[in-house]
Image 1 (tube, rainbow, N blue to C red):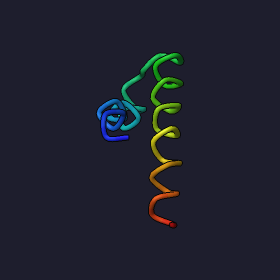
Image 2: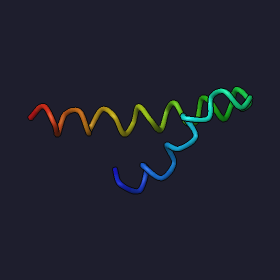
Image 3: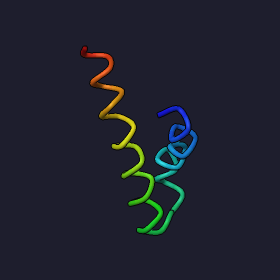
Image 4: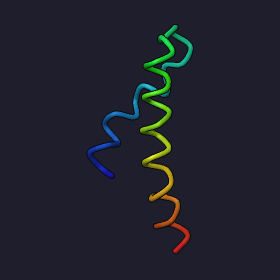
Length: 43
């Protein structure tokens, strides 16, 4: 989860005009990180 966190910076750049594939990649990685992190916090 920590290593994937380095890839998440791109989802903060949605206003700079990233192409559709890049936005999809960053959104997918963000969801892959947020779900296990949420489960850890809730448990």
